[in-house]
Structure formats: C-alpha cells, structure tokens
Amino acid sequence: MGERLLRKWILSPMTDPIKIRQRLETVQSLIESGTQLTNLREYLSAIGDMERLAGKLGNQKITPPQLISMSEALKIVAKIKKLEIWNSFLLERINEQLDPLDKICERIENTVVPDPPNSIADGGVIRAGVIPELDELRKLQDDSTTVLKEMEQKLRQETGIEKLRIGFNKVFGYYIEISRAQTKNAPPNLIRKQTLVNSERFITPELKELESKLLAAEERINYIEREYFLTLVAELSIEASKVLNVAIALAKLDILANFAHIAIKKRYTRPQIVDDGVLEIKGGRHPVLEDILGKSAFVPNDLYMDTNEQIIILTGPNMAGKSTYLRQNGLLVLMAQMGSFIPADSAKITPVDRIFTRVGATDYIARGQSTFLVEMLETANILHNATENSLVLLDEIGRGTSTFDGLSIAWAVGEYLHDSKTNRAKTIFATHYHELTQLATYLNRVSNFQVGVRESSGKIVFLHKIVPGGCDDSYGIQVAKLAGVPDIVIGRAKEILEILESGEMPTQNIRKLGGRKGKTERVEGFQVSLFDPEYHPLVLALKEIDLNKLSPLEALNLLSEWKKKWDR
Image (cartoon, rainbow, N blue to C red; front, top):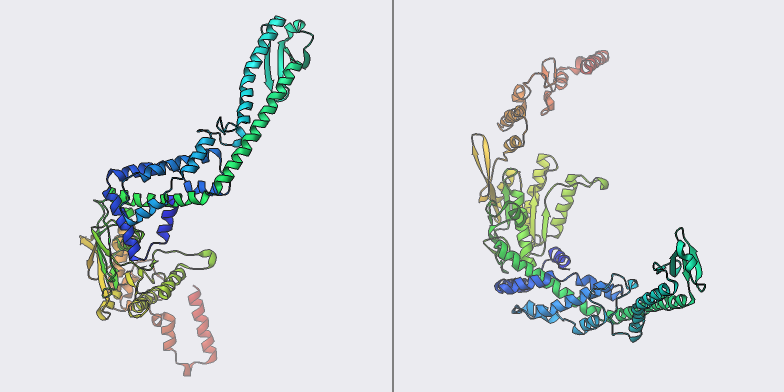
C-alpha cells in the first residue's frame, strides 16, 4: 500500500509551499527520532497490505487467514502509537488516524482460531467455546475415535480374529474388514458389504447407526462454522471504512519513514522551499546514477535560475552529460515537491506547477508519426501549456530534420519561451546547435553553459562538469572513434570536416571531397556535385547551346546523344 501511494506522490507532487514544508519537517523529525525510526520501520515491515484486506472485508470476500492478518496488523498499530515520534503537524494527524480498532481485533481473536485453514469449507475455523452446539458435535467426533476402537476390540474378542479392523472410505463409509482365510469365523450377524481379493468387508446395524451420527455431525459442523463465519464477516464489513483509513495513514507513515531512512543512508539534504522564483541547487547529483556509480564516481553540478536567469543554453559533446544534467535537475525538483530530501549539498527551490520534458527520440509507427513529428507534438504541447511557474527541459530540439530547419525551429522556440508574457518558463535547453549561444547576445534572460571537456593529442576526456560559456565543437568525430568506427572512416571524416569548415564553396574543393578512386561517379572528366546543381555537366552543356541557331532536328539529336551518355 506504501508503494501504491508513493506512485501517486510521484505522479502528483505538491505545489503548495506550506504543504511541502510540512512533509519536509516531518521527514526531519523522523530523522532526529533516532532508534524510534528503526523501531517504526520494523513494525511497518510486519504489516501486510491492509488496504487490500480492507477492500476484501468491505466486499465480504475475506478469508479466515486474511482476517487474522488484519487483526495482527491492527495490534501492531497499537504498538506504533506508543512510539515517541509524534512531534510534527503531519505526524500528529497521522497518529489521530491510526485507530487500533480494539473491538474488531477482540471480536476476531475471540472467534477465529490463530492459524485457520485457507477456506471455511475445510472446517476448524471457529474457536472452541463460541458455539455450544458446535462444541458438542466436535466432542462427538472426537469421542467417535474411542468408540470405534472399543467396537473393534470387542469384535476381535467375540470372533477370535486378531487382525479384524474397522476402516472408512468415502464410497462405502465405515466397514469391518476380515481376511479371506478368517471369514469362516465371522459371526452370523455381520452383513457382507464388499468382496476383495484377499479380504471381505462387512457392516453391522450398530456400526451403521454410528456412521449416520458421525456423518450428520460433520455436515452440521461445516454448516454451523460457515454460517457463523459469514455472519461475522458481514458484521465486520460495516467497519471496513475505518480499516481503510488506518491503512491510508500507515501508507503515508511508511513513505515518510522511508524518506527519512534514505536521507540518513545516502546523506541527502533538506531542500529549502522558497517563493521568490529562485531555483538553486548546489552539488546536485542524479539519484539513480549515484546509486549505480557510487557517490565518489558521480560528478555533482550546480544550477541557478530565477526570473532574470530564465533560460540556460547548454552545449557540449555527446556523452558529456547534458541529458543527465537535465534529468537530474528535473528529478531533484520532483523529489523536493514530493516532500523528500534530495542528493545535493544544498538547495533553494521555488515549487513549479509542472515539469515539461522533451528528451529522447521516439516514434509511433502505428500512428504514422515519425520521430520528428513526435518531437514537434511534444514541443507544441510545451509551448501551449507551460507557464512562468513551469520548468521546461529540452534536449536536442530540431535534430530530427535538416540542419537549417532544426536550427531555425530551436532558435524560434528559445525566443518564444523568452519573450512570451504567459509562457515564460524556466528552461534548460541542451543542444548541438552552437549557433543558439548567440541568443544570449540579445536576450537578457538567456545564459550559456557548457559541459567541460579536456582535449589532448586528438583524444577527449569528459569532465562531466557544467561551466559557464558556450561550446563551439561537438567532438562528434572523436565520439565516433570512441565507439569503434573504423580508422579509415574517421580519417576521411576529418578531411571532409576540414573542407566544410573552411567556409569555401564545396565546388572549389571538389577534387578533395571526391578525390578517392572508385568512390565517385564521373562523366567525361566531370564529377557529379551533391552541393551545387549549376555545376552539373548537363547544366554546363545547356548553357553552351545557342537556341537561335539550333534546329528542331539538331535538338532531337542532341537529346538522343545525352540520353545515350547518361544511360551508360
């Protein structure tokens, strides 16, 4: 039940600063309670899913063992209430909800045996002393064993057959079994019931009468137990809402106790909740990656944003940690607004109304939506719904289309989030479009940050540290080399990159781009250019034609020659 409630808290964190502070104060109080927190967690670990049991009780579908489990859980509630932990506003309210429901526990304990069978049909559910008739019938069952033993001994003495025995099966009921060799000594009052290979089975009127009493007793016992248990459940079901309230209070206490335990174990810090628009995190760490890598291996980073530092343009190479930084800060804000301490040295957080993310590449083939369309749908949702109190995390807007289109869209989105009067959300914008760093030159609430990288002898080392300034290199080729792309491809990529970054028209470096034998298509000394159609051999030939001197027949012949040439 704690897990289910925690999921709700994650999906619907609080936005009211007062309520967030109350939860944080409660976690702080539990941390300071010392051994009382340890005792509380031990008690909680012994309580099952009372919320589910309350539902079963309300629907009158609860089994005898589940009824006992509910009773045992309520007894633990009484122990929890005796702990010295109720010294915060929220804890006092939880304590008021923790009703041990003594009358319910007493009723269950006085009616149902401590270790009942799974089904009422198995019998043996109701305690002795509850129903007089039931006790008498059980005594008859217990006494029947003695009666049968006495009857068996008496028949052995009368017949002189030492191996005579009385047995029972569900088909024939009770019977007297005598071996075939001894059947001649059987008294005449025995009535033959069944013949087997090595023995004969008989009955007597006395045995048949005892059988009737025992079978009737068993049937009556089952009926009495079933009806009494169902009546008990029906009466207790009226109190199911009270049990549910206790379960909800326990679930809240479970989460808060866990928040306190995790804060102690992992040295999390209590965030300071403010209302001046500041979002400041010092030494922030990703809560999941820190668990995986270890605290010493994870590089912490700071974040500062307010109404004057609204947008951060974050540049840097792939694998350097841009996406981690975005996710980390989103998670820390989310955790704080759930009422949890966070992995950071310190934090001042103004609650946000929503956290919007555009992270990762996804497509929906069944819906006919490409990766870029999905990206634009999510971006449109952000631009329509983000407010000045929102936190927006954008990762690589525009990467799913051509460079100029993507850059243009990313640039316009940045301007819109900055200039809009209603959608002026705090935004961290991770991008490989280094041109976006120019936004900071004319938009006063935009700042540039980059992920630090050290380059030495053509190799790069990711520092995973966020520092001021813009990065003008994505180090894509170096990352490709790290990934194991063949050296010949890496070398060629460097050549092409150098040409493209020279600022000259590609046609001026046509032989450099296509200089490798067998790698390009040439026609009579010309290379097909992918960059400038006006230099295509066919275009050049068309430019040399004087249309005033060209007859229709000559034009047709020329077209025929060109077609033959290009068909080759």
